[in-house]
Length: 143
Image (cartoon, rainbow, N blue to C red; front, side, top):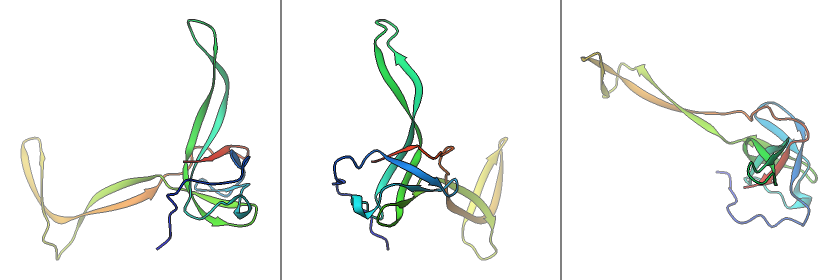
């Protein structure tokens, strides 16, 4: 079983934000930080970009800053000296009913006031959700 780090991230000053250096696919990104920056497998990270629009207070006109637009979260799965691979860790749980001949699960489903008896099994499966349009240059910080 892999070890997940839940301790505070004690990285050298200036380590974060890291930057996405390569998009492997919608689920895996390479960041420009590695073991030299005390990155370890299992650490969780937030991937985001900063909006171009300066948000202003409607009453005072004061600048409130720029929005951080979240691309997703992930977990470090591989570390080299100067780079690491971050894999999406968001999942969606899918449940479905399958017919199984040797099962003891009886499921009653009511539709339009009519009961239907199904003999089957409810299966659950978790699917990874991809990052939301990740780009080279997106920012990464620990969570």
